[in-house]
Length: 429
Image 1: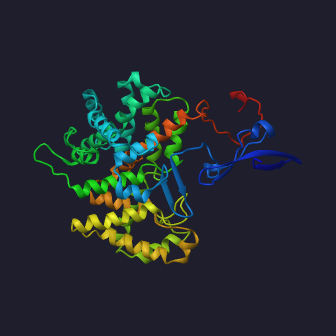
Image 2: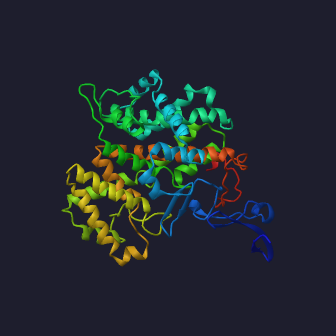
Image 3: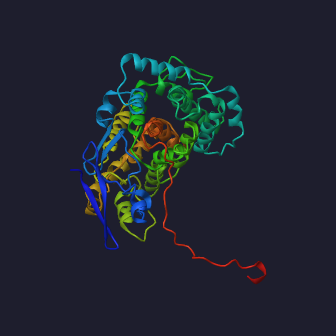
């Protein structure tokens, strides 16, 4: 017998089906709630609302588990590449050698953007944030592919996916070059995805640029760790915008804008700025932890705690190892890394943080790695966008292929404004 949940309202009982996910997650299907009862659910921030069913990513926040299509994030970070992981997320399975080579070839030969788009960059002031440029330029790409904008055409979507994945890294690198007044560097077909991006970011016409394989490996891992994270703010935005049948470029552009916020993708930049503040104040970690616990203090301990994880973020553990290895190889002693380690140790031994499940999250160390790679702080969120892109595409594509794709996203509200009021002529106001 199918399990049902009983809801009693005004002395009357209503029964709603219970849905069980593949990992035994339980949900009450309230899709007919308003039709049957006249009521709606009230859930600010949607912390208890399942807006969709999805087969892409599984998270168990209590146990610190993250899996893409069933594969543990630890295995992917160690054994996979960002391109292969992107294929896994978007198409639902690890590619064969033939599929992976075909995918790589498409990414290689779609890396350039239309030459006329270079003039767009000239219209932005040097003070323009790279995320502003990225969002606008991605949206502008739709003007160049009017024949590939139908979200329900599998043929058009399959042709568009590699173009979006490849061109966004080119736009990101160009936005950085423009912000520092350097000429853009065109992509090189002989380089792989991450190496090509690093080349476009850091090469200059006046001298050769050698891509460090260890740096490529580190960037590859970072992008994998950021590739998807279930129904977060930006992914939900991509789904919501896509539900109107907006094209993939427009939907991804909206996701970039959502990610830009300091409470979402901008958090890793905030962590580095916090560590810099502690460093300027003499590196007193204990004083920082004390200030973070003081409600009257304006100091915030960034990079701790997560909306989903109630234990150590599995991505943070992987990033920390890469951070240690990269800085050790480069023989760089970064005082911020030392502060970060002491801050983590101090906080995790403090009952205040343990009781509140405030463990380091993915942002705590990712900013330090970007810093070690020579990437400036205003590009951190852009890097997050590059990593999260395959997840956005996967969810956008899954949504259009699901049985619920005919429904446009349209949350309800509880109205708390004025009741009916007469119109008062301006003379009488």
